[in-house]
Amino acid sequence: MPEQHEEPREEQRRAPRKSPGRPPRISLDQVLDAARRVVTEEGVAKLTMRRLATEVGSTPMALYHHVRDKDELLVLLLDDYARRNLRRPELPADPQERVLLAATAIHDALAGCPWIVEVLTADDLMSTASLWFVEQIVEGLLACGLTPERAVHGYRAIWYYTAGEIMIRATAGRRRADSGHRTYRERVFADLDAHEFPCLARVAADWAEITAEDTYRQGLRALVYGLLAVS
Image 1 (cartoon, one colour):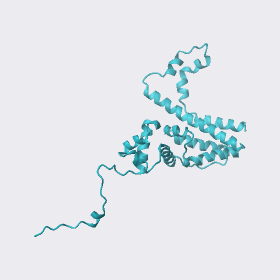
Image 2 (tube, helix red, strand yellow):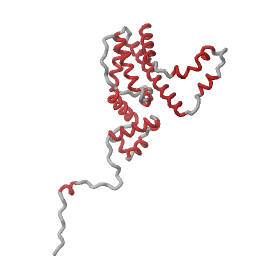
Image 3 (tube, rainbow, N blue to C red):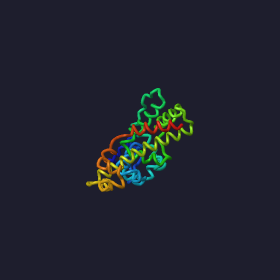
Image 4 (spheres, one colour):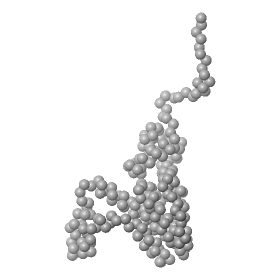
């Protein structure tokens, strides 16, 4: 009796053949999760397409189906972070208070994620999801009497102050955490010549404690008041 061959099922005939060794298909969410992990743990400089491909178990070419290059990847990360962490507050009627509130919202959202500030300080990448906050600052400065040009300059001063405060605190915190002994500044301040530097010597013992205080809001208010005073 001749051997009977079972006819293949319809789904088997339609199923594409898998090429051996082909890397698994990856999603944009997987790419962003891996990229976020690299920049958070190691910094933006360590993020490359080749490194990212290794993280997701794929090839650099496969990543280009989702992003054109590293800059586009960073913009996607910025927008993703902004959507998750930036909440639009209820705005006060006073334009000066709107400026303060919007700037503080940006600061508070970014303070826990210094790599974001590192990307933004390149000054050519931005998150469109965060532009609402920039709009509120510029609009508030215009409403306070600044010209469009001065309002943009004012926003830039506020952003520089905000970004600098976040980055300096984050860097100082990492250095203190990595060091098991007194910092270089502490050693210098301990040996200050009180005749040459009388003011610094007077506060040297309390310098670290004083400078560790969170004075962002006070500094921001002073900055905004100063910007408006010379308008």
